[in-house]
Image (cartoon, rainbow, N blue to C red; front, top):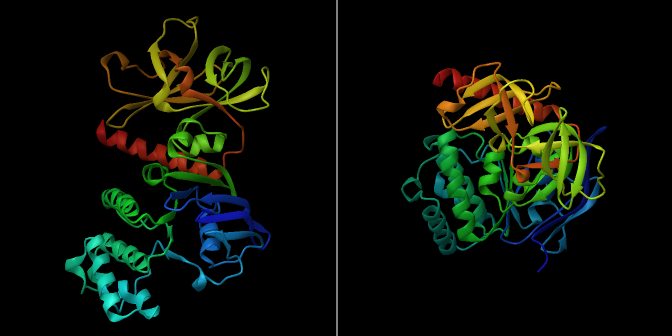
Length: 383
């Protein structure tokens, strides 16, 4: 079977700004694929091109093997759920869900049967006569989903549909959305800038940066094996450390960081020992132990910041060459270091990976700064 959705070298410009460059990917039937990236990376533009709401400047779009690049939105076998839900305020929940079926001129009996099934599917049987302003945000979101699914589209496009919900309701709706997709087997293409949401929901994730798809794969692979510094930083907020490759044996390498040796995976082709490299290691993969004296063996550094965030403590360590990294450690009495304490830094060889250097965009740095400020706030409340 051909892919449910296939894009071939899509390009979209807005004036002199290139919003999307050479975007190519495939989505299999029944797959839940997420377009993930910071604001302005091109993910919503890509979704709008698939929906037919915008036209590409170059490239092609195929749905189930059929080229639809030049077809208008209303002729494409897709439906879109927007962040705003776009419910009709003068129609109740029942009539909102029935709207698309009515436009398709289905029989009254088919419409009634289909709407009743959708109301049961999203758990809103008792709210059918309520108007949008009488529904909660989560209920409005369910009505929007039910309206889109009532026409049985082979592909459903979702543009940050959970962004307006509060955190607790958002988590609940994530579970319900994933369950709904499994029940129906519909192909979902989901847009979000939330890394946790993408990891939770997706069969595969396509990460976008500056209008380009920089890596595509299952959540576990992107989390454990990022290919670029941007992906490592954006998904899971990896520590990025500069070093020099000393030796390589198969997929394992020894890297010099701050004058000391450290292990890392090296899966890139064409790389050679002796060149500058960037290491990505996640905070939860970093181990710290007390060190005695500046001549302690291995990679060492000094504690410069501590953030207590409930489940663990984030320790920021400055290495002798000025680079910093964060370790996320569970609470133990032996780990109650003071600011300025000398610690030994280590990680398991598989916990670090050599990635392709790139310019981590301002959006990622802003996101990292925002997360750090959030953690600081949590730390102040909990201490």
